[in-house]
Length: 114
Ligand code: FES
Image (cartoon, rainbow, N blue to C red; front, side, top):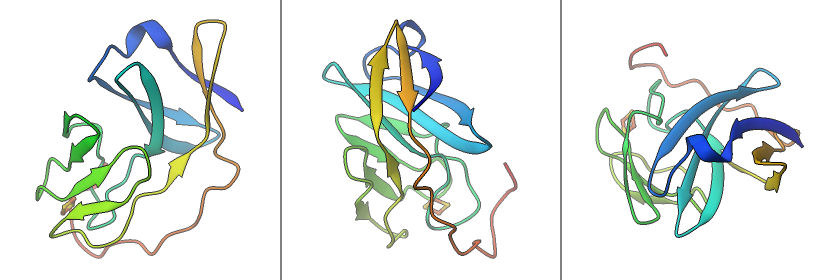
């Protein structure tokens, strides 16, 4: 586990982008719980931290693909693959994230660079 962001900087229903051990991570808070996901849409080369959060559902800012922040499960097209989630631990006012299990993914062939 590595410190990612201060808990106070991620309010209820908010998203925060950060980097842990070179991995781009999105941290969010829903119903008082913190979640961490790979900050990369599974559809194209688009970061997800500019998206919108509605309950546990995160909508990609580029094409509107939807994901469950608890599991990374894809909930709606055009994305069809899940986004990786990471274990989270709260300690001394900070959200700690474990990215040791990050998986290499096939780079999408289109989309803006982030
Ligand atoms: S880049 Fe996210 S849905 Fe297309």
